[in-house]
Image 1 (cartoon, rainbow, N blue to C red):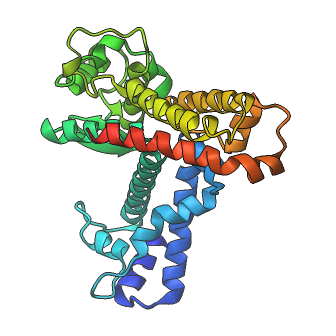
Image 2: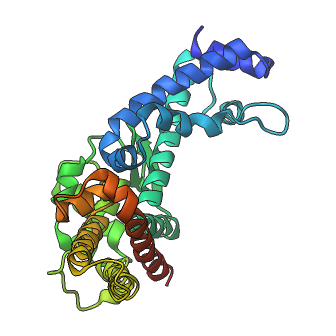
Length: 319
């Protein structure tokens, strides 16, 4: 059954289980393709939580198959209100790919915001700038770009975007316009900014210790991310010393191993997220540590100290 026929069948009969199942399967296959194409962005979620590409694909499209008050699926509502209208099979296929890739990108952004608090803060700041200055976002071949007008040419890839000069990112108010102007005038690409690559670039610059700016108040996040993590790390160190060293719950060698492990965690948090498993962090600094001993003696302590660190970071982010 063709895509347009599937949509029309579900429109006429919201309880046509066979047609709904076919539409779900087709949507899932499209979503899986785009999730797999973005594996690099979400590998930490896959590794840390053991989630599969299949599960993430299902999560991405699930909101489209929620029933509305009149028993129609959300995807059918979107189909009926599609701005350009759907007249033939080509239109229907374009619509389905467009709405699925949009959902996948939204889901990936949601995942990154959950796993990386700094991504969340920068991402929200960029969205504010987009709305404030009336720029638009366009989903183009599975990547979301910031644009002034519809894309009609080759777009910059993440590798080339990473090479853009630091000074383009120094002024919050002119950030987007400076980037669009530079891409248009100084490169061969259409003036469009990949959103996730922009977040990554800003975060990278924010953690570069050698970046010294006279007017830090004019920067997107005031480049204070490193200090936020360091504040959380210091809180964890204080708790480690007060609750475990002074009370003789851990000996001096264990305390030092914990300090080193926490420092490694802080470094990885600055760089985008944690490696899978707290055991690996402690074992790296305590080579003889067996997994069963970690679970019995150290796991709760590590989880508690990490919670202390993240709580402080969250408090700093809210300021």
